[in-house]
Length: 499
Image 1 (cartoon, rainbow, N blue to C red):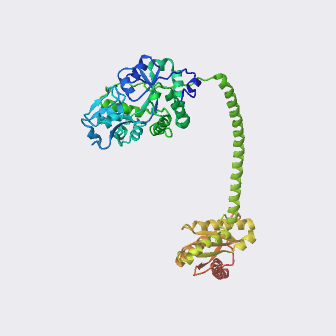
Image 2: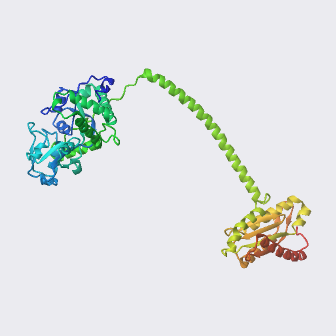
Image 3: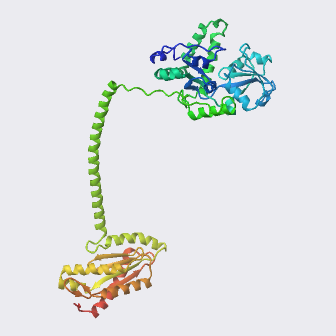
């Protein structure tokens, strides 16, 4: 198909194709330069190890379709049954996979490879031979046509998984004309790809070629021949694997494994040199006249994209700054909404929000909240005598002293407004509340060194313990009421500010 579709010609190659003759060694012909290229199986590795200057260009079959065929009902049901049996093989190492299988399994058989013997199923039907080496893309079809039931022994099922369909050349051609070798490889692979994807057109070409051959009068009718070729072409896909592996691909590790198996089976000597065996296509030459235009386009595109990206970067940084500033503003708004702007303590909004989350837990009996409602004694006298600045200074100092006495998890000090403060103990009891109240009273009785003078004040504290189904307002009102009772007592006892 590479020849028929002009793929060789499009690569600048004037190619002539020759079918291999029975007695001809393809590897010898390529090595001697009688032809430049050949296609064969893994025996190319043996010839390479024996000193021929050969280079592998591509592999068509990822798995070899070689097999041994026996007829059902002849007493051969497993591979070991071939011991001492007569096996008809191809000449030389054309059946390297089958021979390797026999050696691997230590089967001592009578192997016949004479080119004068007819290689068809008739020799098995007439009991001239017990087994026949075949290519499974062809052999089973003939068996079905002759209404015999075959048994196949595939070497790859026993670990003899060789490449087949090596496209190769000689060392001189690969060294002197690497561009031509690469062009031949491209054309051959294009031909295979076309054949595998255009089945009917390929069959038309193959049938027409068969009809032109000298032996066409002896061949089967064209319809039968077409069916046979179609069977081959479809079956080949299972061994070429074009849907999974790139056409022509040679895996160096798999090739090394094949070489090692051939060494282990005694076909080639250990230490055989396979360096440079896989042909590496030369790098394509750069047409700078063509690429010069493209380079200018690419550079212009890069400059445009660079400028555009720079502009986007500036916009992005500006947006990030705006987002950051907005977040900061939102945080400040949220903080101001939940905190007293003079003392920095939580305010009434934060206290009520915290109670909203605490009281459901209290209702289920998981915590016992306690509120301490506090009011500074004689604060109004300080504020009236020394002014609001002194009053603010006193409020800040009092808040700091109380804050230092708190420390248990969740304890929240709140300034409700003026000189009123509230402490929320999220899970406490009367004993702890009384101890904390005593500490606060003693701390607040110590004089405060204000900027105008030292003043001594006191504090009145009332507290309320949560009872079942109590609301936040009820809890706060209970503490507030008790605080005013205590404050009334303090007011009667202390009338003066000590300064």
